[in-house]
Length: 380
Image: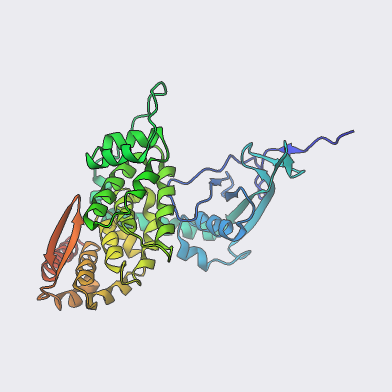
């Protein structure tokens, strides 16, 4: 007689309640696992392969701390939180299969659980509330700005278009953002084809394509953020390929994240990796400055004091972008260093909403100091 397989719904190892299927968090990250939360306060992530134990546990702990990684690193297991895991989990059916095999498929998924002790959970909550209070004070325009309009659901009876490089290129040349957004919903390889257009020897063309991708991604993400998250992962991967030139990649990351920092703001810190390379330093500073215009708190959450060093960089392009960035985060701590550049006549260029704009470092300093003074007068 064949023994019947034991197939049950997954449960919380701390309270025994059944848990719902994990899903992607609204805020997208570089290392993404579906996450969930139990009624008892425990949080969990799903690793469908069972091979990413370390990364999944880290993400679960950070998620339990309201995405405050610095606080998470200060916690000690057992003293501050408990961990648990449910093995043999099948993500497709949302079931636990004791025999590790279901209909000929190997079942190796794992649900990782973390539950903070009451005192640690209370501290995490207070830190999150404090950060929200700072955000409301520092970014009133972001809080009181127009609500993000969700793209209408595509007509299920429509004739779906198929994306190809010729069609995508024509739409980019016409700046047809509406058409490209619709094409993204029809054919998920549209963003990949847009990415290929970045490989162009003309810098101005790369900037224009990056600007198009940023606007298309911003609207697509209102309904399908996963597509855009995958694009950002590909862009960062391409930037890290030592055998290839990251033409247009950092520019595109800056456009995408700056237009939807509410979803993709967690990608900001990874731009710091490209400050060390001479060929990408000014581009990374530009991208950080674009993000800072809407969400200066995302930059201030980073070790931003290291950015002061770029005010003394030998290249005017780097100094200019560093000045723009520090002005946009209203870094009063750098006022004296900025004033030292008030007579710097070196020219640099910035891409602003579809146009290349040239200015001197001194002009950028004047603008930055005005922003800092305005922040001080407003008590920010």
